[in-house]
Length: 400
Image (tube, rainbow, N blue to C red; front, side):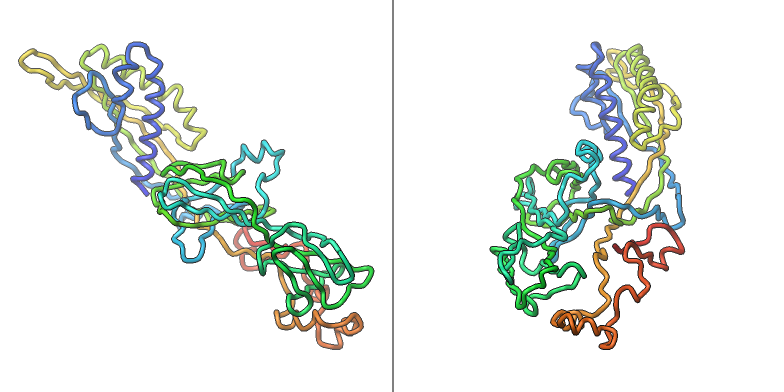
């Protein structure tokens, strides 16, 4: 973790300094390409800035580094029998949500990410969730689902009002290809059918894949951060929910990091000018700019000056100066929470399937037959707080 963090921090400083010096008419051609982390020059340049990490101290913000639970519309999930390591983390794209008038721009569902064999591109295969769709009635026992083909076995059928669950093979048959539902018994005139199901949407791609880069376009509203563990043929999934829910546990802390900068130049006046202008830019401009990205520059201090022989016979020298920057930055790890509670059933599956075959007259005698009516359980159907987690924090699961 330490080297990943410090390497990213050094790369950020290098990009900012290269951008700054690219506007200087006297040095843009001689220094920009020689702002780097190592003295790995084929030929010694006329000017350059070398950035190195000198030390770092870990700052614990909690005994176990636990920061809290991340609530999001999207969370990362693995697909069975695949490593699923290509994407390091995902986040909501707030700019895309804002541009969509505050609504999450992607429909709820499961978005499968298929990495191609070359490891340089990927496709996204959506499996869209549909909730509480009123099924179109064609006849006394014939009904039709709107989006077809549906994912076989994903449908859940309910008789409304009353929210009575029907089961395939017990109460109805369904053709996944056409979405046609055939009931074994006709509904009463005051009843209708509602269905939850999933259906495959059109695949998108290929999307370009680069290690250590993020993609914000493949799944609108989601930032996919690819790391260095990309493997051809890998597969993983992003689950999009209708409402924000617990998506990951966050563990994090802070590091105090000291960075050393070595300025080299063939001319002593150039060395002094480069050093002064770099320090002024870091302390006066870059400090506030990086603060918005979670990098706090705490102090900038000067070091000494040295000389190094370039050509002893010609009495030619390199002039070196050094300064150090102390900054503070956060680190975080996210552990995905893949299991979510979508519905609470008051009966076992066997009991529910048996009860779904009862007539209205038999259901009217529910209490005498040993059935428990939901309202008698004392549950709040709008939300229910897990008493264990409620004692410790407000990040408990909410059952809708």
